Image 1 (tube, rainbow, N blue to C red):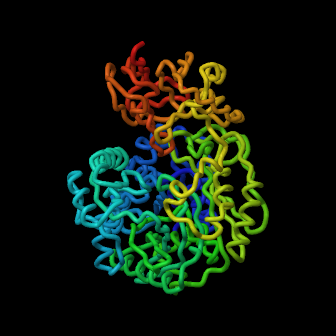
Image 2 (image 1 turned 120 degrees about the vertical axis):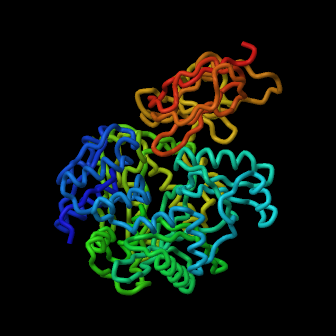
Image 3 (image 1 turned 90 degrees about the vertical axis):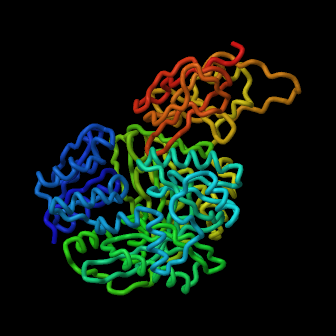
Length: 596
Protein backbone atom coordinates (compact mmCIF):
# COMPACT_ATOMS: atom_id res chain seq x y z
CA UNK A 1 0.00 0.00 0.00
CA UNK A 2 1.08 3.57 -0.61
CA UNK A 3 2.35 5.61 2.34
CA UNK A 4 2.06 9.20 1.01
CA UNK A 5 0.07 10.69 -1.89
CA UNK A 6 0.21 14.20 -3.33
CA UNK A 7 -3.21 15.42 -4.51
CA UNK A 8 -2.69 17.64 -7.58
CA UNK A 9 -6.05 19.38 -7.39
CA UNK A 10 -8.30 21.57 -5.25
CA UNK A 11 -11.91 21.91 -4.13
CA UNK A 12 -14.35 19.05 -3.74
CA UNK A 13 -12.32 16.32 -5.42
CA UNK A 14 -9.16 17.15 -3.48
CA UNK A 15 -11.15 16.97 -0.24
CA UNK A 16 -12.66 13.65 -1.34
CA UNK A 17 -9.26 12.10 -2.09
CA UNK A 18 -7.62 13.42 1.08
CA UNK A 19 -10.38 11.97 3.25
CA UNK A 20 -10.12 8.57 1.58
CA UNK A 21 -6.35 8.62 2.07
CA UNK A 22 -6.88 9.30 5.77
CA UNK A 23 -9.25 6.34 6.05
CA UNK A 24 -6.65 4.12 4.38
CA UNK A 25 -3.85 5.33 6.65
CA UNK A 26 -2.09 7.14 3.77
CA UNK A 27 -0.52 10.55 4.44
CA UNK A 28 -1.68 13.30 2.07
CA UNK A 29 0.02 16.32 0.57
CA UNK A 30 -2.07 19.22 -0.71
CA UNK A 31 -0.91 21.78 -3.23
CA UNK A 32 -2.45 25.22 -3.41
CA UNK A 33 -2.35 28.62 -5.05
CA UNK A 34 -2.04 31.91 -3.19
CA UNK A 35 -5.80 32.34 -3.52
CA UNK A 36 -6.41 28.96 -1.88
CA UNK A 37 -4.13 29.42 1.13
CA UNK A 38 -7.05 28.94 3.54
CA UNK A 39 -8.99 26.42 1.45
CA UNK A 40 -10.57 23.31 2.96
CA UNK A 41 -8.33 20.86 1.11
CA UNK A 42 -5.27 22.64 2.53
CA UNK A 43 -6.64 22.46 6.07
CA UNK A 44 -7.42 18.75 5.81
CA UNK A 45 -4.15 17.51 4.31
CA UNK A 46 -1.22 16.32 6.41
CA UNK A 47 1.11 18.66 4.49
CA UNK A 48 0.59 21.49 2.01
CA UNK A 49 2.85 23.11 -0.57
CA UNK A 50 2.34 26.55 -2.12
CA UNK A 51 2.66 26.40 -5.91
CA UNK A 52 2.25 30.02 -6.97
CA UNK A 53 -0.16 32.79 -7.89
CA UNK A 54 -3.91 32.44 -8.27
CA UNK A 55 -3.75 31.82 -12.01
CA UNK A 56 -4.08 28.10 -12.72
CA UNK A 57 -1.16 28.33 -15.16
CA UNK A 58 1.08 29.37 -12.27
CA UNK A 59 -0.26 26.84 -9.81
CA UNK A 60 -2.54 23.89 -10.56
CA UNK A 61 -1.30 23.57 -14.15
CA UNK A 62 2.38 24.06 -13.32
CA UNK A 63 3.74 20.55 -13.95
CA UNK A 64 7.32 21.21 -12.81
CA UNK A 65 6.16 22.76 -9.54
CA UNK A 66 3.86 19.84 -8.77
CA UNK A 67 6.59 17.27 -9.48
CA UNK A 68 9.00 19.19 -7.24
CA UNK A 69 6.38 19.35 -4.48
CA UNK A 70 5.94 15.58 -4.63
CA UNK A 71 9.68 14.96 -4.47
CA UNK A 72 10.34 17.46 -1.68
CA UNK A 73 7.64 15.97 0.54
CA UNK A 74 8.55 12.34 -0.14
CA UNK A 75 5.26 11.47 -1.79
CA UNK A 76 5.25 8.16 -3.66
CA UNK A 77 2.33 8.90 -5.92
CA UNK A 78 0.31 11.72 -7.45
CA UNK A 79 -3.50 11.71 -7.73
CA UNK A 80 -4.76 14.23 -10.33
CA UNK A 81 -8.46 14.12 -9.43
CA UNK A 82 -10.54 15.51 -12.30
CA UNK A 83 -10.01 18.69 -14.30
CA UNK A 84 -6.73 20.61 -14.45
CA UNK A 85 -4.03 18.04 -15.36
CA UNK A 86 -6.08 14.88 -14.85
CA UNK A 87 -6.17 14.01 -18.57
CA UNK A 88 -2.86 15.60 -19.53
CA UNK A 89 -0.59 12.92 -21.01
CA UNK A 90 2.49 15.13 -20.59
CA UNK A 91 1.78 15.44 -16.87
CA UNK A 92 1.32 11.68 -16.44
CA UNK A 93 4.58 11.11 -18.36
CA UNK A 94 6.40 13.66 -16.17
CA UNK A 95 5.18 11.86 -13.05
CA UNK A 96 6.31 8.52 -14.47
CA UNK A 97 9.71 9.92 -15.53
CA UNK A 98 10.22 11.32 -12.03
CA UNK A 99 9.97 7.80 -10.62
CA UNK A 100 6.58 8.49 -9.06
CA UNK A 101 3.29 6.63 -9.45
CA UNK A 102 0.56 8.34 -11.44
CA UNK A 103 -2.80 7.32 -9.97
CA UNK A 104 -4.52 6.83 -13.28
CA UNK A 105 -3.88 5.13 -16.61
CA UNK A 106 -0.52 5.07 -18.40
CA UNK A 107 0.39 8.28 -20.20
CA UNK A 108 0.15 6.39 -23.49
CA UNK A 109 -3.52 5.60 -22.87
CA UNK A 110 -4.27 9.21 -21.91
CA UNK A 111 -2.58 10.46 -25.07
CA UNK A 112 -4.53 8.14 -27.38
CA UNK A 113 -7.92 8.72 -25.74
CA UNK A 114 -7.24 12.45 -25.40
CA UNK A 115 -7.30 12.78 -29.17
CA UNK A 116 -10.88 12.38 -30.28
CA UNK A 117 -9.75 11.18 -33.69
CA UNK A 118 -7.32 8.59 -32.29
CA UNK A 119 -10.03 7.49 -29.83
CA UNK A 120 -12.46 6.94 -32.71
CA UNK A 121 -9.87 4.80 -34.48
CA UNK A 122 -9.30 2.67 -31.37
CA UNK A 123 -13.04 2.37 -30.86
CA UNK A 124 -13.43 1.12 -34.42
CA UNK A 125 -10.72 -1.49 -33.84
CA UNK A 126 -12.51 -2.57 -30.64
CA UNK A 127 -15.81 -2.89 -32.54
CA UNK A 128 -17.51 -0.12 -30.58
CA UNK A 129 -20.42 1.53 -32.48
CA UNK A 130 -19.92 5.16 -33.50
CA UNK A 131 -21.84 7.98 -35.11
CA UNK A 132 -20.55 8.99 -38.57
CA UNK A 133 -17.54 11.29 -38.31
CA UNK A 134 -14.79 12.86 -40.37
CA UNK A 135 -11.65 10.96 -41.23
CA UNK A 136 -9.24 13.08 -39.21
CA UNK A 137 -9.23 16.82 -38.62
CA UNK A 138 -10.88 19.23 -41.02
CA UNK A 139 -9.28 22.25 -42.67
CA UNK A 140 -12.06 24.54 -43.83
CA UNK A 141 -15.80 25.31 -43.78
CA UNK A 142 -15.99 23.49 -47.12
CA UNK A 143 -15.23 20.25 -45.25
CA UNK A 144 -18.18 20.94 -42.96
CA UNK A 145 -20.51 21.50 -45.91
CA UNK A 146 -19.31 18.38 -47.72
CA UNK A 147 -19.86 16.28 -44.59
CA UNK A 148 -23.33 17.77 -44.07
CA UNK A 149 -24.28 17.09 -47.68
CA UNK A 150 -23.26 13.45 -47.26
CA UNK A 151 -24.58 12.66 -43.78
CA UNK A 152 -27.22 15.34 -43.23
CA UNK A 153 -27.60 18.17 -40.72
CA UNK A 154 -27.15 19.07 -37.93
CA UNK A 155 -23.38 18.51 -37.77
CA UNK A 156 -21.18 18.92 -34.70
CA UNK A 157 -17.75 20.56 -35.01
CA UNK A 158 -15.67 19.34 -32.06
CA UNK A 159 -12.25 20.14 -30.62
CA UNK A 160 -9.90 17.24 -31.31
CA UNK A 161 -8.18 17.70 -27.95
CA UNK A 162 -11.16 19.07 -26.08
CA UNK A 163 -14.00 18.07 -23.83
CA UNK A 164 -16.86 19.42 -21.74
CA UNK A 165 -18.45 21.07 -24.77
CA UNK A 166 -15.67 23.64 -25.16
CA UNK A 167 -14.64 24.12 -28.76
CA UNK A 168 -17.89 22.52 -29.93
CA UNK A 169 -20.34 24.16 -32.34
CA UNK A 170 -23.52 22.78 -33.86
CA UNK A 171 -24.10 23.53 -37.55
CA UNK A 172 -27.76 23.51 -38.60
CA UNK A 173 -27.15 24.20 -42.30
CA UNK A 174 -24.46 25.03 -44.84
CA UNK A 175 -25.08 28.73 -44.20
CA UNK A 176 -23.78 28.35 -40.64
CA UNK A 177 -20.59 26.48 -41.57
CA UNK A 178 -18.17 29.37 -41.88
CA UNK A 179 -18.97 31.15 -38.62
CA UNK A 180 -19.23 27.90 -36.64
CA UNK A 181 -15.91 26.63 -38.00
CA UNK A 182 -14.11 29.86 -37.06
CA UNK A 183 -15.57 30.09 -33.54
CA UNK A 184 -14.94 26.39 -32.80
CA UNK A 185 -11.28 26.73 -33.74
CA UNK A 186 -10.93 29.94 -31.75
CA UNK A 187 -12.43 28.50 -28.57
CA UNK A 188 -10.49 25.25 -28.95
CA UNK A 189 -7.21 27.16 -29.20
CA UNK A 190 -8.07 29.28 -26.16
CA UNK A 191 -9.18 26.33 -24.02
CA UNK A 192 -6.75 23.58 -25.04
CA UNK A 193 -3.84 25.24 -26.81
CA UNK A 194 -4.71 23.42 -30.06
CA UNK A 195 -7.24 24.51 -32.67
CA UNK A 196 -7.66 21.13 -34.39
CA UNK A 197 -11.32 20.24 -34.95
CA UNK A 198 -13.20 17.31 -36.48
CA UNK A 199 -16.80 16.48 -37.40
CA UNK A 200 -19.55 14.17 -36.18
CA UNK A 201 -23.17 13.71 -37.14
CA UNK A 202 -25.13 15.43 -34.39
CA UNK A 203 -27.82 13.36 -32.65
CA UNK A 204 -30.19 16.02 -31.41
CA UNK A 205 -32.41 13.90 -29.13
CA UNK A 206 -30.08 11.23 -27.75
CA UNK A 207 -29.41 10.51 -24.10
CA UNK A 208 -25.95 10.68 -22.56
CA UNK A 209 -25.12 7.42 -20.80
CA UNK A 210 -21.71 6.43 -19.48
CA UNK A 211 -20.18 3.19 -18.27
CA UNK A 212 -17.72 2.92 -15.38
CA UNK A 213 -14.75 0.71 -16.18
CA UNK A 214 -11.84 -0.40 -14.00
CA UNK A 215 -8.63 -2.26 -14.86
CA UNK A 216 -5.55 -3.32 -12.93
CA UNK A 217 -1.98 -4.28 -13.75
CA UNK A 218 -2.81 -8.00 -13.50
CA UNK A 219 -4.84 -8.13 -16.69
CA UNK A 220 -8.25 -7.73 -15.09
CA UNK A 221 -10.79 -5.33 -16.61
CA UNK A 222 -14.45 -4.96 -15.64
CA UNK A 223 -17.42 -2.68 -16.13
CA UNK A 224 -19.27 -1.78 -12.97
CA UNK A 225 -22.50 -0.02 -13.75
CA UNK A 226 -23.79 2.83 -15.86
CA UNK A 227 -24.97 6.40 -15.25
CA UNK A 228 -27.31 8.78 -17.05
CA UNK A 229 -25.98 12.33 -17.50
CA UNK A 230 -28.48 13.66 -20.03
CA UNK A 231 -29.51 16.81 -18.17
CA UNK A 232 -27.01 19.32 -19.46
CA UNK A 233 -26.59 23.01 -20.14
CA UNK A 234 -23.87 24.25 -22.48
CA UNK A 235 -22.77 20.61 -22.63
CA UNK A 236 -22.09 20.69 -18.89
CA UNK A 237 -23.80 18.06 -16.75
CA UNK A 238 -26.17 19.24 -14.02
CA UNK A 239 -27.75 16.04 -12.66
CA UNK A 240 -26.56 12.43 -12.88
CA UNK A 241 -28.09 9.16 -11.78
CA UNK A 242 -27.36 5.44 -11.53
CA UNK A 243 -28.39 3.13 -12.93
CA UNK A 244 -29.41 4.89 -16.15
CA UNK A 245 -33.23 4.52 -16.15
CA UNK A 246 -35.26 2.98 -18.93
CA UNK A 247 -32.57 0.84 -20.59
CA UNK A 248 -32.98 -2.81 -21.50
CA UNK A 249 -30.70 -5.39 -19.91
CA UNK A 250 -29.38 -6.23 -23.37
CA UNK A 251 -28.41 -2.61 -24.05
CA UNK A 252 -26.65 -2.26 -20.69
CA UNK A 253 -24.67 -5.44 -21.24
CA UNK A 254 -23.72 -4.47 -24.80
CA UNK A 255 -22.46 -1.06 -23.67
CA UNK A 256 -20.55 -2.59 -20.77
CA UNK A 257 -18.87 -5.20 -22.90
CA UNK A 258 -17.97 -2.61 -25.55
CA UNK A 259 -16.43 -0.44 -22.82
CA UNK A 260 -14.25 -3.28 -21.56
CA UNK A 261 -13.09 -4.07 -25.11
CA UNK A 262 -12.07 -0.44 -25.53
CA UNK A 263 -10.22 -0.34 -22.20
CA UNK A 264 -8.33 -3.52 -23.02
CA UNK A 265 -7.49 -2.31 -26.52
CA UNK A 266 -5.85 0.85 -25.19
CA UNK A 267 -3.99 -0.89 -22.33
CA UNK A 268 -5.98 0.87 -19.66
CA UNK A 269 -5.24 0.80 -15.91
CA UNK A 270 -7.34 2.38 -13.16
CA UNK A 271 -10.76 4.04 -13.18
CA UNK A 272 -12.16 5.28 -16.47
CA UNK A 273 -15.48 6.16 -18.04
CA UNK A 274 -16.69 5.39 -21.54
CA UNK A 275 -19.40 7.79 -22.68
CA UNK A 276 -22.11 6.99 -25.22
CA UNK A 277 -24.99 8.69 -26.96
CA UNK A 278 -27.99 6.39 -26.58
CA UNK A 279 -31.26 6.02 -28.47
CA UNK A 280 -33.03 3.84 -25.94
CA UNK A 281 -36.13 3.25 -28.05
CA UNK A 282 -33.92 1.65 -30.71
CA UNK A 283 -31.56 -0.12 -28.27
CA UNK A 284 -28.78 1.75 -30.09
CA UNK A 285 -25.64 3.34 -28.64
CA UNK A 286 -22.73 5.26 -30.14
CA UNK A 287 -19.26 5.91 -28.74
CA UNK A 288 -18.73 9.52 -27.67
CA UNK A 289 -15.42 9.62 -25.77
CA UNK A 290 -13.46 8.05 -22.94
CA UNK A 291 -12.62 10.04 -19.83
CA UNK A 292 -9.32 8.75 -18.46
CA UNK A 293 -9.93 9.75 -14.84
CA UNK A 294 -12.38 9.57 -11.98
CA UNK A 295 -15.65 11.33 -12.88
CA UNK A 296 -17.44 14.08 -10.98
CA UNK A 297 -20.49 11.80 -10.82
CA UNK A 298 -18.74 8.69 -9.49
CA UNK A 299 -20.61 8.79 -6.12
CA UNK A 300 -23.87 7.52 -7.67
CA UNK A 301 -22.06 4.36 -8.76
CA UNK A 302 -20.51 4.01 -5.32
CA UNK A 303 -23.87 4.31 -3.57
CA UNK A 304 -25.62 1.74 -5.75
CA UNK A 305 -22.79 -0.81 -5.62
CA UNK A 306 -21.32 -0.28 -2.15
CA UNK A 307 -17.87 0.72 -3.42
CA UNK A 308 -15.23 3.37 -2.77
CA UNK A 309 -13.81 4.01 -6.22
CA UNK A 310 -11.07 6.34 -4.94
CA UNK A 311 -9.91 3.65 -2.50
CA UNK A 312 -9.90 1.20 -5.41
CA UNK A 313 -7.77 3.66 -7.40
CA UNK A 314 -5.22 3.83 -4.59
CA UNK A 315 -5.06 0.05 -4.30
CA UNK A 316 -4.62 -0.51 -8.04
CA UNK A 317 -1.91 2.18 -8.17
CA UNK A 318 -0.09 0.29 -5.42
CA UNK A 319 -0.08 -2.83 -7.62
CA UNK A 320 -2.92 -4.70 -5.98
CA UNK A 321 -5.48 -6.64 -8.04
CA UNK A 322 -9.02 -5.36 -8.38
CA UNK A 323 -11.34 -6.26 -5.54
CA UNK A 324 -14.17 -6.33 -8.12
CA UNK A 325 -13.88 -9.64 -9.92
CA UNK A 326 -16.91 -9.65 -12.22
CA UNK A 327 -18.53 -7.20 -14.60
CA UNK A 328 -22.12 -6.04 -14.49
CA UNK A 329 -22.98 -6.46 -10.83
CA UNK A 330 -26.66 -5.66 -10.29
CA UNK A 331 -27.08 -2.24 -8.68
CA UNK A 332 -28.91 -1.95 -5.38
CA UNK A 333 -31.52 0.79 -5.48
CA UNK A 334 -31.13 4.13 -7.23
CA UNK A 335 -28.87 7.14 -6.64
CA UNK A 336 -29.08 10.70 -7.98
CA UNK A 337 -26.47 13.46 -7.78
CA UNK A 338 -27.02 17.21 -8.09
CA UNK A 339 -24.04 19.46 -8.80
CA UNK A 340 -24.30 22.57 -6.64
CA UNK A 341 -22.42 25.45 -8.25
CA UNK A 342 -21.97 29.07 -7.21
CA UNK A 343 -24.05 30.48 -10.04
CA UNK A 344 -27.05 32.80 -10.23
CA UNK A 345 -29.76 30.90 -12.11
CA UNK A 346 -32.27 33.73 -12.52
CA UNK A 347 -33.57 33.84 -16.05
CA UNK A 348 -31.67 30.55 -16.65
CA UNK A 349 -28.50 32.62 -17.16
CA UNK A 350 -26.33 30.65 -14.68
CA UNK A 351 -24.06 33.65 -14.06
CA UNK A 352 -20.88 32.69 -12.15
CA UNK A 353 -21.12 34.20 -8.66
CA UNK A 354 -17.95 33.76 -6.61
CA UNK A 355 -17.65 35.17 -3.12
CA UNK A 356 -17.58 34.31 0.60
CA UNK A 357 -19.88 31.59 1.91
CA UNK A 358 -21.45 32.47 5.24
CA UNK A 359 -22.98 29.05 5.95
CA UNK A 360 -22.77 25.54 4.55
CA UNK A 361 -25.10 23.06 6.25
CA UNK A 362 -25.82 19.72 4.61
CA UNK A 363 -28.92 17.59 5.26
CA UNK A 364 -28.49 14.81 7.80
CA UNK A 365 -31.35 12.52 6.80
CA UNK A 366 -30.73 8.84 5.95
CA UNK A 367 -29.65 8.06 2.40
CA UNK A 368 -28.13 11.52 1.80
CA UNK A 369 -24.47 12.29 1.14
CA UNK A 370 -22.77 15.68 0.71
CA UNK A 371 -19.37 15.82 -1.01
CA UNK A 372 -18.29 19.43 -0.49
CA UNK A 373 -15.21 21.51 -1.14
CA UNK A 374 -16.15 24.33 1.22
CA UNK A 375 -17.24 24.91 4.79
CA UNK A 376 -18.88 27.88 6.46
CA UNK A 377 -16.62 30.93 6.20
CA UNK A 378 -14.74 29.74 3.09
CA UNK A 379 -14.66 31.73 -0.14
CA UNK A 380 -15.51 30.58 -3.67
CA UNK A 381 -12.67 31.92 -5.82
CA UNK A 382 -13.36 33.39 -9.28
CA UNK A 383 -10.32 31.73 -10.86
CA UNK A 384 -11.54 28.14 -10.86
CA UNK A 385 -14.57 25.91 -11.38
CA UNK A 386 -17.71 27.07 -9.56
CA UNK A 387 -18.55 23.70 -7.97
CA UNK A 388 -19.34 24.11 -4.27
CA UNK A 389 -20.30 20.50 -3.70
CA UNK A 390 -22.43 17.56 -4.74
CA UNK A 391 -25.66 16.45 -3.10
CA UNK A 392 -26.23 12.72 -3.58
CA UNK A 393 -29.21 10.67 -2.44
CA UNK A 394 -29.94 6.95 -2.45
CA UNK A 395 -33.27 5.13 -2.14
CA UNK A 396 -34.67 1.69 -3.06
CA UNK A 397 -36.39 3.08 -6.19
CA UNK A 398 -35.97 6.06 -8.53
CA UNK A 399 -39.26 7.61 -7.43
CA UNK A 400 -38.26 7.34 -3.78
CA UNK A 401 -34.84 8.80 -4.58
CA UNK A 402 -36.46 11.79 -6.30
CA UNK A 403 -38.76 12.37 -3.33
CA UNK A 404 -35.80 12.17 -0.96
CA UNK A 405 -33.76 14.52 -3.16
CA UNK A 406 -36.58 17.07 -3.13
CA UNK A 407 -36.51 17.14 0.66
CA UNK A 408 -32.70 17.20 0.78
CA UNK A 409 -32.51 20.19 -1.57
CA UNK A 410 -34.93 22.06 0.69
CA UNK A 411 -32.79 21.21 3.73
CA UNK A 412 -29.43 22.13 2.14
CA UNK A 413 -28.31 25.55 3.41
CA UNK A 414 -25.70 27.59 1.53
CA UNK A 415 -25.75 31.29 2.41
CA UNK A 416 -23.56 34.01 0.93
CA UNK A 417 -23.50 33.06 -2.73
CA UNK A 418 -26.35 32.12 -5.07
CA UNK A 419 -26.30 28.49 -6.15
CA UNK A 420 -27.86 26.23 -8.76
CA UNK A 421 -30.19 24.61 -6.21
CA UNK A 422 -33.29 26.45 -7.56
CA UNK A 423 -32.60 25.06 -11.03
CA UNK A 424 -32.15 21.54 -9.67
CA UNK A 425 -35.49 21.75 -7.87
CA UNK A 426 -37.28 22.64 -11.10
CA UNK A 427 -35.54 19.93 -13.11
CA UNK A 428 -36.33 17.04 -10.79
CA UNK A 429 -39.95 18.20 -10.43
CA UNK A 430 -40.54 18.37 -14.19
CA UNK A 431 -42.76 15.65 -15.63
CA UNK A 432 -40.29 14.94 -18.46
CA UNK A 433 -37.54 14.16 -15.98
CA UNK A 434 -39.86 12.08 -13.83
CA UNK A 435 -40.94 10.14 -16.92
CA UNK A 436 -37.38 9.73 -18.27
CA UNK A 437 -38.21 11.79 -21.35
CA UNK A 438 -35.06 13.92 -21.14
CA UNK A 439 -32.10 14.01 -23.53
CA UNK A 440 -29.00 16.15 -23.96
CA UNK A 441 -30.89 19.04 -25.59
CA UNK A 442 -34.02 18.78 -23.47
CA UNK A 443 -33.20 21.56 -21.00
CA UNK A 444 -32.15 24.14 -23.59
CA UNK A 445 -34.41 23.24 -26.50
CA UNK A 446 -37.56 21.41 -25.45
CA UNK A 447 -38.72 23.35 -22.40
CA UNK A 448 -38.86 27.03 -21.49
CA UNK A 449 -36.51 26.63 -18.56
CA UNK A 450 -36.17 30.37 -17.96
CA UNK A 451 -39.91 30.60 -17.22
CA UNK A 452 -39.48 28.12 -14.35
CA UNK A 453 -36.89 30.27 -12.58
CA UNK A 454 -36.98 33.78 -11.07
CA UNK A 455 -36.83 36.31 -13.90
CA UNK A 456 -34.48 39.00 -15.06
CA UNK A 457 -35.96 42.01 -16.78
CA UNK A 458 -36.03 42.74 -20.49
CA UNK A 459 -34.79 46.26 -21.19
CA UNK A 460 -37.09 46.56 -24.18
CA UNK A 461 -40.05 46.63 -21.79
CA UNK A 462 -38.80 49.41 -19.51
CA UNK A 463 -39.39 53.15 -19.84
CA UNK A 464 -36.61 55.68 -19.53
CA UNK A 465 -37.92 56.74 -16.13
CA UNK A 466 -37.89 53.10 -14.98
CA UNK A 467 -34.29 52.58 -16.03
CA UNK A 468 -33.20 55.68 -14.12
CA UNK A 469 -34.78 54.29 -10.96
CA UNK A 470 -33.37 50.79 -11.38
CA UNK A 471 -29.69 51.72 -11.34
CA UNK A 472 -27.36 50.14 -10.37
CA UNK A 473 -27.98 47.08 -12.52
CA UNK A 474 -26.25 44.36 -14.48
CA UNK A 475 -26.82 44.09 -18.24
CA UNK A 476 -26.44 40.77 -20.03
CA UNK A 477 -27.33 39.28 -23.40
CA UNK A 478 -29.23 36.04 -23.92
CA UNK A 479 -29.65 35.09 -27.54
CA UNK A 480 -30.58 38.29 -29.34
CA UNK A 481 -32.18 40.08 -26.42
CA UNK A 482 -30.66 42.34 -23.78
CA UNK A 483 -31.68 41.91 -20.16
CA UNK A 484 -31.06 43.74 -16.92
CA UNK A 485 -30.59 42.17 -13.49
CA UNK A 486 -31.70 44.72 -10.88
CA UNK A 487 -29.89 45.53 -7.64
CA UNK A 488 -26.49 44.41 -8.91
CA UNK A 489 -23.56 46.24 -7.37
CA UNK A 490 -19.79 45.88 -7.77
CA UNK A 491 -19.64 44.79 -4.14
CA UNK A 492 -21.33 41.47 -4.78
CA UNK A 493 -23.33 39.24 -7.11
CA UNK A 494 -26.81 40.00 -8.27
CA UNK A 495 -28.38 37.63 -5.78
CA UNK A 496 -27.03 39.61 -2.82
CA UNK A 497 -30.42 41.36 -2.81
CA UNK A 498 -33.82 40.06 -3.84
CA UNK A 499 -34.86 40.40 -7.47
CA UNK A 500 -37.31 43.15 -8.27
CA UNK A 501 -40.79 42.23 -9.45
CA UNK A 502 -41.06 42.25 -13.27
CA UNK A 503 -42.04 45.61 -14.70
CA UNK A 504 -45.38 45.73 -16.51
CA UNK A 505 -45.13 45.67 -20.30
CA UNK A 506 -45.56 49.01 -22.04
CA UNK A 507 -48.66 49.36 -24.17
CA UNK A 508 -47.86 49.23 -27.88
CA UNK A 509 -48.29 52.75 -29.25
CA UNK A 510 -46.94 52.33 -32.76
CA UNK A 511 -44.89 55.49 -32.26
CA UNK A 512 -41.17 55.91 -31.54
CA UNK A 513 -39.92 54.90 -28.13
CA UNK A 514 -38.59 57.47 -25.74
CA UNK A 515 -34.85 57.82 -25.57
CA UNK A 516 -33.57 56.19 -22.41
CA UNK A 517 -31.97 58.24 -19.71
CA UNK A 518 -28.36 58.13 -18.52
CA UNK A 519 -26.42 55.13 -17.32
CA UNK A 520 -24.75 52.21 -19.03
CA UNK A 521 -27.60 51.44 -21.40
CA UNK A 522 -27.66 54.92 -22.90
CA UNK A 523 -23.93 55.64 -22.98
CA UNK A 524 -22.93 52.29 -24.38
CA UNK A 525 -20.69 51.55 -21.43
CA UNK A 526 -20.04 47.82 -21.11
CA UNK A 527 -19.58 46.64 -17.54
CA UNK A 528 -18.40 43.31 -16.25
CA UNK A 529 -21.31 41.12 -15.08
CA UNK A 530 -18.99 39.22 -12.74
CA UNK A 531 -15.45 38.98 -11.47
CA UNK A 532 -13.36 37.27 -14.12
CA UNK A 533 -10.46 37.42 -16.54
CA UNK A 534 -10.48 39.10 -19.94
CA UNK A 535 -9.87 36.15 -22.30
CA UNK A 536 -9.96 38.03 -25.60
CA UNK A 537 -10.77 41.44 -27.07
CA UNK A 538 -12.47 41.46 -30.46
CA UNK A 539 -12.52 45.18 -31.30
CA UNK A 540 -10.19 48.18 -31.39
CA UNK A 541 -10.73 51.78 -30.38
CA UNK A 542 -12.40 53.55 -33.30
CA UNK A 543 -14.12 50.43 -34.62
CA UNK A 544 -17.72 50.64 -35.82
CA UNK A 545 -19.91 48.13 -33.96
CA UNK A 546 -23.53 47.06 -34.05
CA UNK A 547 -25.73 46.60 -31.00
CA UNK A 548 -25.25 43.02 -29.86
CA UNK A 549 -21.81 42.63 -31.42
CA UNK A 550 -19.22 40.88 -29.24
CA UNK A 551 -16.68 43.35 -27.86
CA UNK A 552 -14.68 40.90 -25.78
CA UNK A 553 -14.93 37.60 -23.91
CA UNK A 554 -14.73 37.37 -20.14
CA UNK A 555 -13.82 34.04 -18.56
CA UNK A 556 -15.02 33.26 -15.06
CA UNK A 557 -15.05 29.89 -13.34
CA UNK A 558 -14.16 28.08 -16.59
CA UNK A 559 -17.12 29.67 -18.42
CA UNK A 560 -16.68 32.03 -21.35
CA UNK A 561 -19.08 34.97 -21.35
CA UNK A 562 -19.32 37.28 -24.39
CA UNK A 563 -19.55 40.98 -23.59
CA UNK A 564 -21.65 42.70 -26.27
CA UNK A 565 -22.22 46.27 -27.37
CA UNK A 566 -25.40 47.75 -25.93
CA UNK A 567 -25.74 50.29 -28.77
CA UNK A 568 -24.71 50.76 -32.38
CA UNK A 569 -21.82 53.20 -32.62
CA UNK A 570 -18.05 53.64 -32.34
CA UNK A 571 -15.73 52.10 -29.73
CA UNK A 572 -14.53 55.16 -27.84
CA UNK A 573 -12.39 53.43 -25.22
CA UNK A 574 -11.17 50.02 -24.05
CA UNK A 575 -10.52 50.02 -20.32
CA UNK A 576 -8.97 46.55 -20.01
CA UNK A 577 -6.47 44.27 -21.71
CA UNK A 578 -6.26 40.53 -22.32
CA UNK A 579 -5.33 38.63 -19.17
CA UNK A 580 -6.53 41.34 -16.81
CA UNK A 581 -8.65 40.26 -13.83
CA UNK A 582 -11.64 42.56 -13.42
CA UNK A 583 -14.11 43.02 -10.60
CA UNK A 584 -17.86 42.69 -10.95
CA UNK A 585 -19.26 45.97 -12.24
CA UNK A 586 -15.91 47.19 -13.61
CA UNK A 587 -16.03 49.26 -16.79
CA UNK A 588 -14.73 47.26 -19.76
CA UNK A 589 -15.38 49.45 -22.79
CA UNK A 590 -17.30 52.49 -23.94
CA UNK A 591 -19.24 52.72 -27.20
CA UNK A 592 -20.48 56.14 -28.33
CA UNK A 593 -23.90 55.71 -29.87
CA UNK A 594 -24.30 56.64 -33.50
CA UNK A 595 -25.55 60.22 -33.92
CA UNK A 596 -24.30 61.42 -30.55
